[in-house]
Image (tube, rainbow, N blue to C red):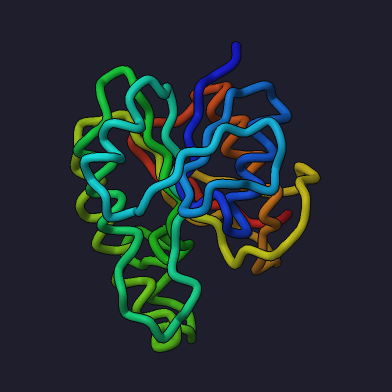
Length: 207
């Protein structure tokens, strides 16, 4: 059955694929973006700023699923984007709605006591983004709402081919270090339909 889905961060690499894959499965998709037009057809457009809490709260009413794939593409910019929007969305959704947020792979567990972000060599390069995502994670995880965290590894351009691995809480074991944006979008659209996971985080990587 078709779902009413709104996507924040829809102009980014992952966001566009999330929109495309949801259209493929027949969902009614709306994007929340700054500009009044959008490159993908058969999509409803709502314009607004990510900081406009009152507008966002009003806009998401009536949607069954809210997806956020926002992020700061400038690694040197300490401005937080993920945590402020996640806080607004988590405060605003109703019991009948579902929130899906895309975070970094660093929040997945490698072992019972080790996060992905604690085990690689990019801690300094990604410190601003990881601080933003960690704050969002810490605010969202304890809440008693219908949410799911999607944590892909390094995302690269590419359409979906279904050739990926996923795992709940712990990061999937794979020789690959990347995942295509299409496979991220495919997994999210599939999960919106199947509703297999709730109140957890899912790691994704190409198989």
